[in-house]
Length: 510
Image (tube, rainbow, N blue to C red; front, side):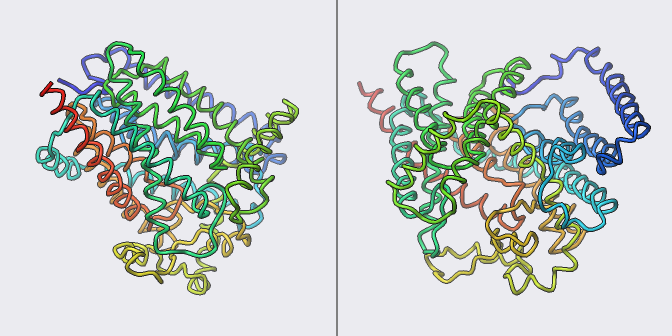
């Protein structure tokens, strides 16, 4: 029996496949025609980056090829790691964001730092295509799937009844909420940054993830119910209210994405079919949520002013002031404000272009900023917990990177794995490094989800490790964070399963 959430080949009529080449040719003809009209009308003089349109189209084709392969194999699903990476980051950040930059909707202040944009910007797009291709090849190679299959057959089932998991999941949620509140007081949560790095900071951060893990687990239990039960109404209210509270206190512009992913992944991995209609509705809701997040997050940061650590009372006051400011603002001005910030936030192409343009010239200065050879240093240092090595240096420091490359340490600019690999190993390092990530993702997917019935603890662990992968940060932090969050999730799973096992035994005794 095929796990629900996957699309079987038998359900695909042949005519659905045969129209795809025609649609691609039509789209290509339209794009070429539009590009020709823009050239003949003189729009290139008003919008100097329109020459990127063919390059962006080519990048879109590169990203579409693996999607078609998975579609023809009957494996296309949003929870697939490659599909998730494509539609959650690579396509919106580089194709859509690049389009915003090309037509002038995104006009970041650091554009002047891109040297020789006529050559640098196409090169940046080519490097993104190279990195994505490496990721796709690594994922589609059979090695990761074969190793994952062996692991899957040796993992314990330990599948307990959903009802027995409710109480321990609520306990885990309470633990996550309390740890997050503690992190807020210590300046480890929200839009604030503690000056001193302590040996227990990592432990505090990772235990706050129990909140996310428990939320996913509870939504998963709800979606696995065949019939509605009144007992789930207060749980849904609790989940929505805690998610809203976390969003308000995070001060982040992208926290709403986490809420969306928790619910969407729980729905699909529960065994329910994710239809095109539901996907369209989800996409609309996500777009609206992102706009709200951009408006609230940017307003909160403007009101708070800096990342200085505050008391819980002061921080809460800023939350209320932000809600009041957003509520009293003019609707048109608010939407315009959100749209401008949204287009610039989505555009990662121009940010990466700064690295591509300057990494060779700035390489001699990286040692002074502690950024030289950061991938190997981060991988090596991550093996030793800070509680054992209190003076462990912070290697992949976003502020120092932003200071060196963007001349501004007050924000954290995206670097992306491609940019980090380029800085460390040159162009050849990009496909090799991304291929390794692709193989790891396929191994984990095959071990926990692919070609098997959904087991609650496995899909929960899968969700936690998959969403831990950041394609916007340093490459050197991907695998260390991946394993640390995986270990944290395993601890949470063990807590939940031990209690659920006792509940199941008690029910059998009764």
